[in-house]
Length: 150
Picture (cartoon, rainbow, N blue to C red):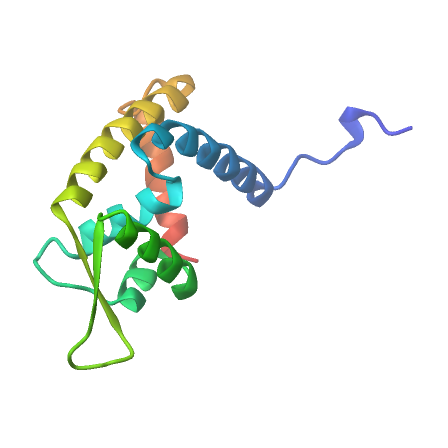
């Protein structure tokens, strides 16, 4: 019978997948009182970042920016639109495209969500010395580098 020592260590990809699932569950629980899911928060934050210069990106541009599938962005932005956090409008140049704009209410929800996310991040990164520790910053920088190469 194989022992624990006989098993190969888990792959990095498997560990990242497990960590992402757990992180998403923590975010969903933390954001629920604000009426947001982790997916909604991520799309809202991406839209805010993408449109800070005053533009109204298309759903396709938002999907590309966030690294999500366009269909997923479409579903999430419809829910955010119904909640009054995002406005969707037809693009006058391309009738197939939908332009997006974060509403004032959306900015308020995002601001409250960000406070919650940073609080949860501090808790989750406590074993590394907290969100601002050298180890956490190194981890963040490593993850950014890996994301740029995928």
